[in-house]
Length: 414
Image 1 (cartoon, rainbow, N blue to C red):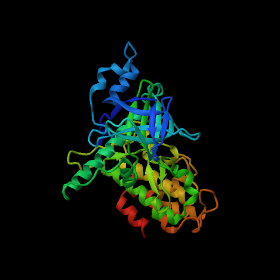
Image 2: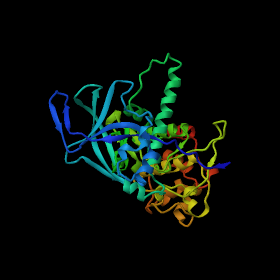
Image 3: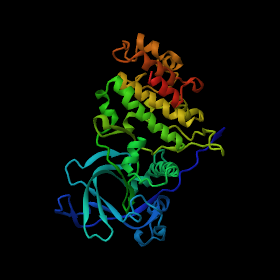
Image 4: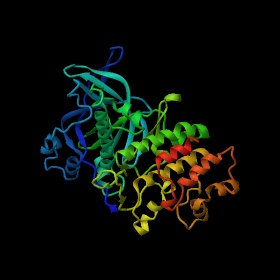
Protein backbone atom coordinates (compact mmCIF):
# COMPACT_ATOMS: atom_id res chain seq x y z
CA UNK A 1 0.00 0.00 0.00
CA UNK A 2 1.13 3.57 -0.75
CA UNK A 3 0.53 6.29 1.83
CA UNK A 4 1.56 9.86 2.57
CA UNK A 5 4.17 10.13 5.35
CA UNK A 6 2.68 11.29 8.68
CA UNK A 7 3.90 14.74 9.76
CA UNK A 8 6.39 15.21 12.57
CA UNK A 9 5.11 16.78 15.78
CA UNK A 10 5.64 20.52 16.14
CA UNK A 11 9.02 20.76 17.92
CA UNK A 12 9.51 22.89 21.06
CA UNK A 13 11.87 25.86 21.09
CA UNK A 14 12.71 28.52 23.67
CA UNK A 15 13.20 32.28 23.35
CA UNK A 16 16.81 33.47 23.30
CA UNK A 17 18.39 36.32 25.20
CA UNK A 18 21.91 37.72 25.16
CA UNK A 19 23.74 39.03 28.16
CA UNK A 20 26.83 40.92 29.16
CA UNK A 21 28.10 39.44 32.36
CA UNK A 22 30.65 37.32 34.15
CA UNK A 23 31.52 33.69 33.47
CA UNK A 24 33.92 31.74 35.70
CA UNK A 25 36.33 29.26 34.14
CA UNK A 26 37.55 25.95 35.54
CA UNK A 27 40.22 27.81 37.52
CA UNK A 28 37.47 30.04 38.97
CA UNK A 29 38.90 33.06 37.18
CA UNK A 30 36.33 35.59 36.04
CA UNK A 31 35.81 35.97 32.27
CA UNK A 32 33.92 39.01 31.04
CA UNK A 33 31.43 38.25 28.24
CA UNK A 34 30.24 41.11 26.06
CA UNK A 35 28.61 41.90 22.71
CA UNK A 36 25.85 39.32 23.05
CA UNK A 37 28.22 36.37 22.68
CA UNK A 38 26.03 34.06 24.80
CA UNK A 39 22.72 32.43 23.91
CA UNK A 40 20.56 32.18 27.00
CA UNK A 41 17.07 30.76 27.45
CA UNK A 42 14.57 33.47 28.31
CA UNK A 43 10.81 33.26 28.67
CA UNK A 44 8.51 30.28 28.23
CA UNK A 45 8.88 27.51 25.69
CA UNK A 46 6.76 27.65 22.57
CA UNK A 47 6.74 25.69 19.30
CA UNK A 48 8.42 26.13 15.96
CA UNK A 49 5.17 26.58 14.01
CA UNK A 50 3.97 29.43 16.23
CA UNK A 51 7.30 31.22 16.06
CA UNK A 52 7.50 30.76 12.29
CA UNK A 53 4.03 32.31 11.84
CA UNK A 54 5.06 35.22 14.03
CA UNK A 55 8.32 35.71 12.09
CA UNK A 56 6.45 35.59 8.78
CA UNK A 57 3.70 37.95 9.97
CA UNK A 58 5.26 40.10 12.71
CA UNK A 59 2.94 41.97 15.09
CA UNK A 60 2.20 45.59 14.34
CA UNK A 61 4.30 46.82 17.26
CA UNK A 62 7.24 44.70 16.13
CA UNK A 63 7.69 43.30 19.64
CA UNK A 64 7.74 39.50 19.42
CA UNK A 65 8.63 39.23 23.09
CA UNK A 66 5.04 40.06 24.01
CA UNK A 67 3.41 37.57 21.64
CA UNK A 68 0.75 35.47 23.41
CA UNK A 69 2.08 32.43 21.56
CA UNK A 70 5.23 32.51 23.68
CA UNK A 71 3.49 31.21 26.80
CA UNK A 72 3.03 27.50 26.11
CA UNK A 73 5.71 26.27 28.53
CA UNK A 74 6.37 23.09 26.55
CA UNK A 75 9.19 20.90 27.78
CA UNK A 76 12.65 21.68 26.44
CA UNK A 77 15.90 19.74 26.58
CA UNK A 78 18.01 21.88 28.91
CA UNK A 79 15.61 23.95 30.96
CA UNK A 80 17.04 22.79 34.30
CA UNK A 81 13.62 22.42 35.96
CA UNK A 82 14.28 18.83 37.07
CA UNK A 83 17.98 19.04 37.86
CA UNK A 84 18.33 22.55 39.27
CA UNK A 85 20.85 23.29 36.49
CA UNK A 86 20.56 26.01 33.83
CA UNK A 87 22.44 26.03 30.53
CA UNK A 88 23.64 28.71 28.11
CA UNK A 89 25.85 28.65 25.01
CA UNK A 90 28.91 30.76 24.33
CA UNK A 91 30.17 31.52 20.83
CA UNK A 92 33.86 30.66 21.12
CA UNK A 93 35.89 33.89 20.89
CA UNK A 94 38.49 32.52 18.46
CA UNK A 95 39.45 33.23 14.87
CA UNK A 96 38.20 29.84 13.65
CA UNK A 97 34.84 30.02 15.43
CA UNK A 98 33.07 29.72 12.05
CA UNK A 99 32.85 25.99 11.34
CA UNK A 100 31.06 25.87 7.99
CA UNK A 101 28.24 27.28 5.90
CA UNK A 102 24.83 25.60 5.82
CA UNK A 103 22.04 25.97 3.28
CA UNK A 104 20.13 28.30 5.57
CA UNK A 105 22.91 29.96 7.52
CA UNK A 106 26.23 29.35 9.25
CA UNK A 107 27.54 26.96 11.89
CA UNK A 108 29.82 28.19 14.69
CA UNK A 109 31.89 26.63 17.44
CA UNK A 110 30.46 27.06 20.91
CA UNK A 111 30.94 26.12 24.56
CA UNK A 112 28.29 25.06 27.03
CA UNK A 113 27.86 27.22 30.14
CA UNK A 114 26.20 25.89 33.27
CA UNK A 115 25.05 27.18 36.62
CA UNK A 116 22.85 26.07 39.46
CA UNK A 117 19.56 27.90 39.77
CA UNK A 118 20.18 30.95 41.94
CA UNK A 119 23.95 31.04 41.35
CA UNK A 120 25.00 34.54 40.14
CA UNK A 121 27.86 33.14 38.03
CA UNK A 122 27.86 30.97 34.95
CA UNK A 123 30.53 28.26 34.75
CA UNK A 124 32.46 27.52 31.55
CA UNK A 125 32.34 23.75 31.00
CA UNK A 126 34.59 21.63 28.82
CA UNK A 127 31.66 20.59 26.63
CA UNK A 128 31.79 21.97 23.11
CA UNK A 129 28.78 22.48 20.90
CA UNK A 130 27.92 23.47 17.34
CA UNK A 131 25.59 26.46 16.96
CA UNK A 132 23.72 26.68 13.66
CA UNK A 133 22.48 30.24 13.09
CA UNK A 134 19.62 30.51 10.56
CA UNK A 135 18.10 33.92 9.73
CA UNK A 136 14.30 33.93 9.69
CA UNK A 137 14.39 35.98 6.48
CA UNK A 138 16.22 33.18 4.69
CA UNK A 139 13.97 30.48 6.17
CA UNK A 140 10.88 32.36 5.00
CA UNK A 141 12.41 33.01 1.58
CA UNK A 142 12.94 29.26 1.07
CA UNK A 143 9.50 28.22 2.31
CA UNK A 144 8.24 25.14 0.50
CA UNK A 145 11.68 23.84 -0.43
CA UNK A 146 12.52 20.19 0.21
CA UNK A 147 14.92 20.91 3.06
CA UNK A 148 13.63 22.96 5.97
CA UNK A 149 14.74 23.58 9.57
CA UNK A 150 11.41 22.47 11.04
CA UNK A 151 11.94 19.00 9.59
CA UNK A 152 15.49 18.82 10.90
CA UNK A 153 14.57 19.95 14.41
CA UNK A 154 11.43 17.81 14.53
CA UNK A 155 13.29 14.70 13.34
CA UNK A 156 16.02 15.17 15.97
CA UNK A 157 13.42 15.58 18.74
CA UNK A 158 11.54 12.57 17.38
CA UNK A 159 14.71 10.49 17.58
CA UNK A 160 15.48 11.68 21.10
CA UNK A 161 11.91 10.97 22.23
CA UNK A 162 12.09 7.50 20.69
CA UNK A 163 15.40 6.81 22.43
CA UNK A 164 14.03 8.04 25.77
CA UNK A 165 10.94 5.85 25.41
CA UNK A 166 13.17 2.85 24.68
CA UNK A 167 15.28 3.70 27.73
CA UNK A 168 12.18 3.98 29.93
CA UNK A 169 10.94 0.60 28.75
CA UNK A 170 14.34 -0.93 29.49
CA UNK A 171 14.44 0.70 32.92
CA UNK A 172 11.07 -0.78 33.84
CA UNK A 173 12.78 -4.16 33.87
CA UNK A 174 15.62 -3.09 36.19
CA UNK A 175 13.85 -0.91 38.72
CA UNK A 176 13.91 2.35 36.74
CA UNK A 177 16.94 3.80 38.52
CA UNK A 178 19.08 4.59 35.47
CA UNK A 179 20.27 8.16 34.98
CA UNK A 180 19.19 10.08 31.90
CA UNK A 181 22.05 10.15 29.37
CA UNK A 182 23.23 13.43 27.89
CA UNK A 183 22.64 14.41 24.27
CA UNK A 184 26.27 13.56 23.48
CA UNK A 185 25.99 10.13 25.08
CA UNK A 186 22.81 9.38 23.13
CA UNK A 187 24.44 10.64 19.94
CA UNK A 188 27.42 8.34 20.36
CA UNK A 189 25.24 5.34 21.22
CA UNK A 190 22.83 5.78 18.30
CA UNK A 191 25.28 7.31 15.77
CA UNK A 192 22.68 10.04 15.19
CA UNK A 193 22.98 13.76 15.94
CA UNK A 194 20.85 14.90 18.89
CA UNK A 195 19.56 18.34 19.90
CA UNK A 196 21.02 20.19 22.87
CA UNK A 197 18.67 23.16 22.59
CA UNK A 198 16.65 25.15 20.07
CA UNK A 199 16.45 28.92 20.65
CA UNK A 200 15.16 31.88 18.67
CA UNK A 201 14.93 35.65 18.63
CA UNK A 202 13.38 38.16 16.25
CA UNK A 203 16.22 37.70 13.76
CA UNK A 204 17.46 34.11 13.90
CA UNK A 205 16.70 30.52 14.73
CA UNK A 206 19.50 28.77 16.68
CA UNK A 207 19.94 25.00 16.57
CA UNK A 208 22.47 23.85 19.16
CA UNK A 209 23.95 20.36 18.89
CA UNK A 210 26.91 18.43 20.34
CA UNK A 211 30.17 19.24 18.58
CA UNK A 212 31.63 16.49 16.37
CA UNK A 213 35.34 17.30 16.42
CA UNK A 214 36.54 15.02 13.60
CA UNK A 215 35.00 16.84 10.64
CA UNK A 216 33.12 15.28 7.72
CA UNK A 217 33.61 11.65 6.79
CA UNK A 218 33.90 12.90 3.19
CA UNK A 219 37.17 14.67 4.02
CA UNK A 220 38.60 11.66 5.86
CA UNK A 221 37.84 8.95 3.29
CA UNK A 222 41.47 8.60 2.21
CA UNK A 223 42.50 7.87 5.82
CA UNK A 224 40.61 4.56 6.01
CA UNK A 225 41.59 1.17 4.61
CA UNK A 226 39.01 -1.26 3.27
CA UNK A 227 39.30 -3.24 6.51
CA UNK A 228 38.61 -0.13 8.58
CA UNK A 229 35.64 0.67 6.37
CA UNK A 230 34.19 -2.83 6.78
CA UNK A 231 34.91 -3.30 10.49
CA UNK A 232 34.63 0.24 11.92
CA UNK A 233 32.82 2.70 9.62
CA UNK A 234 30.08 0.59 8.04
CA UNK A 235 28.92 -1.12 11.28
CA UNK A 236 28.40 2.32 12.86
CA UNK A 237 26.52 3.62 9.82
CA UNK A 238 24.29 0.53 9.90
CA UNK A 239 23.69 1.04 13.63
CA UNK A 240 22.51 4.60 12.92
CA UNK A 241 20.24 3.34 10.14
CA UNK A 242 18.83 0.69 12.44
CA UNK A 243 17.87 3.35 14.99
CA UNK A 244 16.23 5.37 12.20
CA UNK A 245 14.31 2.33 10.97
CA UNK A 246 13.16 1.42 14.47
CA UNK A 247 11.94 5.01 14.96
CA UNK A 248 10.20 4.82 11.55
CA UNK A 249 12.28 7.59 9.95
CA UNK A 250 13.69 7.84 6.44
CA UNK A 251 16.65 10.26 6.17
CA UNK A 252 16.53 10.75 2.34
CA UNK A 253 19.90 12.51 2.11
CA UNK A 254 22.48 9.92 3.13
CA UNK A 255 25.88 10.91 1.73
CA UNK A 256 29.51 11.07 2.81
CA UNK A 257 29.00 14.79 3.47
CA UNK A 258 26.23 14.01 5.97
CA UNK A 259 28.36 11.86 8.26
CA UNK A 260 30.48 13.55 10.91
CA UNK A 261 33.28 12.00 12.95
CA UNK A 262 33.43 12.42 16.71
CA UNK A 263 36.47 11.34 18.74
CA UNK A 264 39.66 9.60 17.67
CA UNK A 265 41.11 6.10 17.42
CA UNK A 266 39.05 3.36 19.03
CA UNK A 267 36.71 6.02 20.46
CA UNK A 268 35.82 7.48 17.05
CA UNK A 269 32.12 7.54 16.22
CA UNK A 270 30.39 8.12 12.87
CA UNK A 271 27.39 10.44 13.31
CA UNK A 272 24.48 10.88 10.87
CA UNK A 273 23.53 14.57 10.55
CA UNK A 274 21.31 16.88 8.48
CA UNK A 275 17.71 15.71 8.83
CA UNK A 276 16.21 18.54 6.77
CA UNK A 277 14.74 16.07 4.23
CA UNK A 278 13.69 13.38 6.69
CA UNK A 279 10.24 11.80 6.58
CA UNK A 280 8.30 9.57 8.89
CA UNK A 281 7.65 6.20 7.27
CA UNK A 282 3.93 5.33 7.15
CA UNK A 283 2.92 2.07 8.84
CA UNK A 284 -0.35 0.21 9.17
CA UNK A 285 -2.18 0.41 12.47
CA UNK A 286 -0.49 -2.80 13.60
CA UNK A 287 2.78 -0.85 13.75
CA UNK A 288 4.73 -3.58 11.93
CA UNK A 289 3.55 -3.41 8.30
CA UNK A 290 5.57 -0.78 6.45
CA UNK A 291 3.93 1.10 3.57
CA UNK A 292 5.53 2.62 0.51
CA UNK A 293 5.81 6.40 0.63
CA UNK A 294 3.89 8.46 -1.89
CA UNK A 295 6.54 10.45 -3.72
CA UNK A 296 6.13 14.25 -3.44
CA UNK A 297 9.27 15.03 -5.48
CA UNK A 298 12.81 13.76 -5.71
CA UNK A 299 15.42 15.08 -3.34
CA UNK A 300 18.97 14.49 -2.16
CA UNK A 301 22.24 14.47 -4.07
CA UNK A 302 21.98 12.91 -7.53
CA UNK A 303 25.27 11.04 -7.09
CA UNK A 304 23.71 9.13 -4.16
CA UNK A 305 20.09 9.02 -5.31
CA UNK A 306 18.43 5.61 -5.65
CA UNK A 307 16.68 5.04 -9.00
CA UNK A 308 13.14 5.11 -7.62
CA UNK A 309 13.82 8.51 -6.01
CA UNK A 310 15.46 9.80 -9.19
CA UNK A 311 12.46 8.67 -11.24
CA UNK A 312 10.08 10.69 -9.07
CA UNK A 313 10.88 13.72 -11.18
CA UNK A 314 8.98 12.26 -14.12
CA UNK A 315 6.99 9.29 -12.86
CA UNK A 316 6.10 10.02 -9.22
CA UNK A 317 7.22 6.51 -8.26
CA UNK A 318 6.43 5.52 -4.64
CA UNK A 319 9.43 4.36 -2.66
CA UNK A 320 10.39 2.24 0.33
CA UNK A 321 11.85 4.33 3.14
CA UNK A 322 14.41 1.72 4.21
CA UNK A 323 15.58 1.02 0.66
CA UNK A 324 15.92 4.74 -0.07
CA UNK A 325 18.53 5.06 2.70
CA UNK A 326 20.41 1.82 2.01
CA UNK A 327 21.13 2.55 -1.67
CA UNK A 328 23.15 5.72 -0.88
CA UNK A 329 24.82 3.81 1.96
CA UNK A 330 26.15 1.39 -0.66
CA UNK A 331 27.35 4.34 -2.77
CA UNK A 332 29.19 5.67 0.32
CA UNK A 333 30.79 2.27 0.93
CA UNK A 334 31.97 1.90 -2.67
CA UNK A 335 33.36 5.44 -2.74
CA UNK A 336 35.17 5.00 0.58
CA UNK A 337 36.88 1.79 -0.53
CA UNK A 338 37.49 2.43 -4.23
CA UNK A 339 38.07 6.18 -3.99
CA UNK A 340 35.66 6.84 -6.89
CA UNK A 341 31.92 6.75 -7.53
CA UNK A 342 30.75 3.49 -9.16
CA UNK A 343 29.39 5.17 -12.29
CA UNK A 344 31.35 8.38 -12.00
CA UNK A 345 28.52 10.43 -10.47
CA UNK A 346 26.24 10.40 -13.49
CA UNK A 347 22.58 10.07 -12.56
CA UNK A 348 21.06 6.63 -11.83
CA UNK A 349 19.42 6.53 -15.24
CA UNK A 350 19.29 3.69 -17.77
CA UNK A 351 20.42 6.26 -20.34
CA UNK A 352 23.94 5.60 -19.06
CA UNK A 353 25.47 2.26 -20.06
CA UNK A 354 27.74 2.02 -17.01
CA UNK A 355 24.86 2.48 -14.58
CA UNK A 356 22.54 0.20 -16.53
CA UNK A 357 24.96 -2.75 -16.60
CA UNK A 358 26.18 -2.31 -13.03
CA UNK A 359 22.67 -2.08 -11.61
CA UNK A 360 21.53 -5.21 -13.44
CA UNK A 361 23.83 -7.39 -11.33
CA UNK A 362 27.11 -7.00 -13.20
CA UNK A 363 28.89 -4.50 -10.94
CA UNK A 364 31.60 -6.99 -9.93
CA UNK A 365 32.36 -8.08 -13.49
CA UNK A 366 32.51 -4.52 -14.82
CA UNK A 367 34.71 -3.29 -11.96
CA UNK A 368 37.15 -6.14 -12.44
CA UNK A 369 37.30 -5.90 -16.24
CA UNK A 370 36.74 -2.24 -16.95
CA UNK A 371 35.91 -0.29 -13.83
CA UNK A 372 34.42 3.20 -13.67
CA UNK A 373 37.79 4.65 -14.68
CA UNK A 374 38.21 2.31 -17.65
CA UNK A 375 41.11 0.33 -16.13
CA UNK A 376 39.47 -2.07 -13.69
CA UNK A 377 39.76 -2.37 -9.91
CA UNK A 378 42.00 -5.16 -8.62
CA UNK A 379 41.79 -6.80 -5.20
CA UNK A 380 44.34 -4.43 -3.74
CA UNK A 381 41.73 -1.69 -4.21
CA UNK A 382 38.52 -3.56 -3.38
CA UNK A 383 37.99 -7.19 -2.45
CA UNK A 384 35.62 -9.71 -4.02
CA UNK A 385 33.72 -9.85 -0.71
CA UNK A 386 33.01 -6.11 -0.79
CA UNK A 387 32.09 -6.16 -4.47
CA UNK A 388 29.70 -9.04 -3.90
CA UNK A 389 27.90 -7.16 -1.13
CA UNK A 390 27.75 -3.94 -3.15
CA UNK A 391 26.50 -5.83 -6.21
CA UNK A 392 23.55 -7.06 -4.14
CA UNK A 393 22.82 -3.62 -2.69
CA UNK A 394 23.08 -1.68 -5.97
CA UNK A 395 20.35 -3.35 -8.05
CA UNK A 396 17.99 -0.97 -9.82
CA UNK A 397 15.04 -3.35 -9.47
CA UNK A 398 13.87 -3.13 -5.86
CA UNK A 399 12.74 -6.76 -5.72
CA UNK A 400 16.32 -7.84 -6.57
CA UNK A 401 17.99 -5.46 -4.14
CA UNK A 402 19.34 -6.30 -0.70
CA UNK A 403 17.57 -4.03 1.83
CA UNK A 404 17.73 -6.12 5.02
CA UNK A 405 20.14 -4.81 7.65
CA UNK A 406 20.54 -8.32 9.03
CA UNK A 407 21.59 -9.72 5.64
CA UNK A 408 23.92 -6.82 4.95
CA UNK A 409 25.62 -7.28 8.32
CA UNK A 410 26.00 -11.01 7.72
CA UNK A 411 27.70 -10.40 4.37
CA UNK A 412 29.81 -7.59 5.83
CA UNK A 413 31.15 -9.94 8.51
CA UNK A 414 32.11 -12.84 6.23
